[in-house]
Image 1: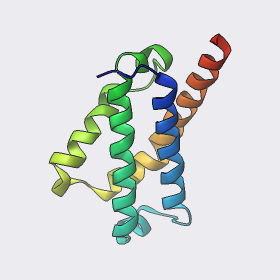
Image 2 (image 1 turned 90 degrees about the horizontal axis):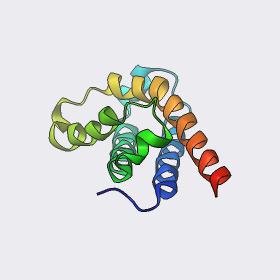
Image 3 (image 1 turned 180 degrees about the vertical axis):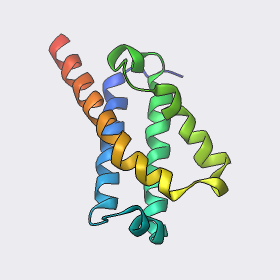
Image 4 (image 1 turned 135 degrees about the vertical axis):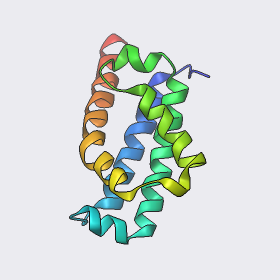
Amino acid sequence: MPSDNPALRFQDILDNIARIEGHVAGLNSASDFTRDTLRQDAVERCLSRISEAAVKLGEQASVYAPDIPWHDIRGIGNILRHAYDGVNPDILWNTVRHELPTLKAACEKALEDMKRHD
């Protein structure tokens, strides 16, 4: 179910990344994150929305941001919904710290490219 307006979906991703950044602000380590289940839950919810936005982008995601592992991003939503009892907080922390900055930069670039072509 691809979106008719990819800019909205890229913005959804950026908005949720910003929320995640706020949720983890002040945490210095994976162990800090692991001890704070409220923040873990908030991060999981934002990651679910990012995953759904990626689903709605469909193939347009790869057109505008080809270097991003969109299949994996779409798949994390299924993991969070169906394998919730096996979600490892350390993996979430690493995703937030090491993967989201790349996704953020790619989405910002995609939006800039769309504006240039309008």
